[in-house]
Length: 205
Image (cartoon, rainbow, N blue to C red):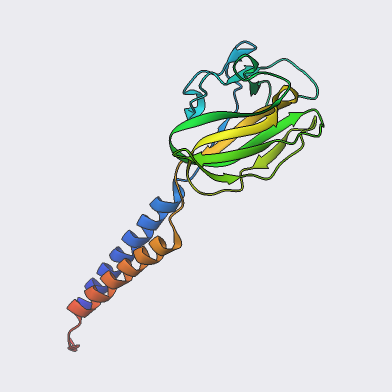
């Protein structure tokens, strides 16, 4: 009977440890901001849409316009020309209320000599800059290439010739390896302690 209770306690501790690991790693789903439920054309993306502060910097539209192809139909966005100017190299931001991991987005547009890229900031400090991508009529995903937290993304492009779609990010950071090791170690320590406390000389019944 003693052996049964020790094993039961061991299994309970192991289950709790594995459950904690599952909670830590599973809440990591990406948010894809498609803009497709916004109605109308050539209107500002509202602040808070998709969990992002657009700050009157971005305009959406849904009519066909080759080569500015939407990744998901119908809508895509472009930089606010009234605020930032047109026909020039620009760096247009959007913001997150709380830091996130920014995955990237789809670019389309004219195949020009001005590639697009992302600059990633946290608390006003540049953290990373993505690789660059030359847009074409086929929407192509550009990864940020950065897995740290950011609260501002600046899109660097020749904004009269490029469209952006399906902006993607996720809010839950994956635990660092040291944290996982520590959690596993804590669970193992609990199992060993439980076994030691319940270890008694075996008596034949």
